[in-house]
Length: 386
Ligand SMILES: Cc1cc2nc3c(=O)[nH]c(=O)nc-3n(C[C@H](O)[C@H](O)[C@H](O)COP(=O)(O)O)c2cc1C
View 1: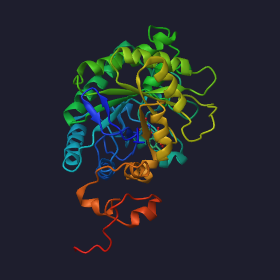
View 2 (view 1 turned 60 degrees about the horizontal axis):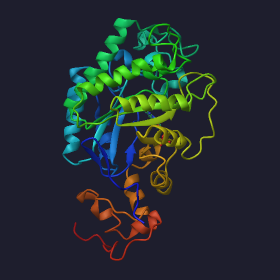
View 3 (view 1 turned 180 degrees about the vertical axis):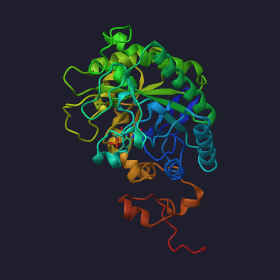
View 4 (view 1 turned 90 degrees about the vertical axis):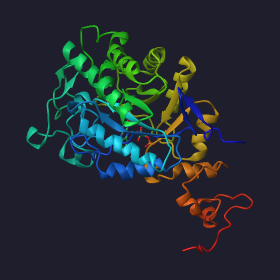
C-alpha cells in the first residue's frame, strides 16, 4: 500500500509534497536577532531533508519578546535583510517550503540559552537582561523576572509587533507562518487560567482569555497574503492542576478555524511550575490532535517523540493527524525523511549532487538502513568517475 505520510497536503496555495514537517527548533545563535552563519548550515541542511515543510525556530517579534538575548528576531531591518538572504540562498538549491514561527516570550523572556541554564534562567541587566511583560504581574517562579502587566497600549503595541513581523516574513520570502501560542510564552500565558489573572475583557472566562491570542492571529491573517497559510501552535493541556484542559484546546482550535487559521499543532506544558507530566512515550501528544481534528474539523499537525517512519505513517494513515512535526529526530539526522520514505516503500527526489548515495544508486544503502531495495536499484558499486 502506498504511504499516506508521503502524500501531498494543500494549505491554501501552498502544496506540501509530504506530511513530514520540521518542527521549530530554537538555536539561540543570533546576534541582536540577526541570523548567523549557524542558521545557514541549520536551515540549509533541513532544506535538503526532503521534508514537506521546514518551520524555522521561535522568532521574536520584538526585542523584549526574545526568550534569550541570542534569539532570532524579525523586528528590525537588519533581521529582515538576513532572513531574506537566508531564504534566497536556500532557494538556490531547494524548493522546500520554508516557514517561520513568530513568538513573544512574555514573562519567560530574558532568560539564558538552554546550554547556560545551569547558571539559572535569570540574566542580570549588566549581562544583557531586560524588563519583561505578561498578562499579569506574576513571575514564573522564584528567580525569574516579575513581568509588567500589559495595559491596553501595551496590547496594541504587541499586536502591532506581530503584524509588522508578519509583513516582514512575507517580504523575506517565507511561504507560511506558525504563530507560537504554547510552551508558556506570551499568548499561552493569556490563555491559561494559571497565568492570566486580569479582570478586564482579556481575563476571567475562557472566552476572554482567548481574546488577545485570537486578535493577534486575526490581525496577522488580515495582512498576510491570502494564498499563504498561517498555523498556530497551541496547548493540549497545561498538565498543572487548574490549568488548560484538552476541552479548552478544542474551543481555542475551533475559534482559530473560524478566523481562517489553516492548522493547529497541539503541544503542551511549560506554562507554570508543578507540571505532572504524563509518561513521555512515542507519540504521547497525538491524542490531542486526534480529538481537536475530530471535534473541530481543523487540519492538525501533531508533535512529540515521533521518530520512526512506521509510527509517523500510522498517525497519518489512521487520520489521527494530518501532518507530523519532527524535532530531535531531524536534528539528529537531517536526512530522516529520505530514509523514512525508503522504509515505507517510497522514493523521494534527492539533490542530484547527492544522488549517488541514494537507494537507487548505492548498494550499501540497503545494509546501512536495513531495507530491501527494488529490482534494479543499488547498482552502482565502485565509484569510478573521479
Ligand atoms: C533544541 C530545541 C529547540 C526547540 N525550539 C522550539 C521552538 O522554537 N518553538 C517550538 O514551538 N518548539 C520548540 N521546541 C520543541 C520542538 O519543536 C518539539 O515540539 C519537541 O522537541 C518535541 O518533538 P520531538 O520529540 O520530535 O523532538 C524545541 C525543542 C528542542 C529540542
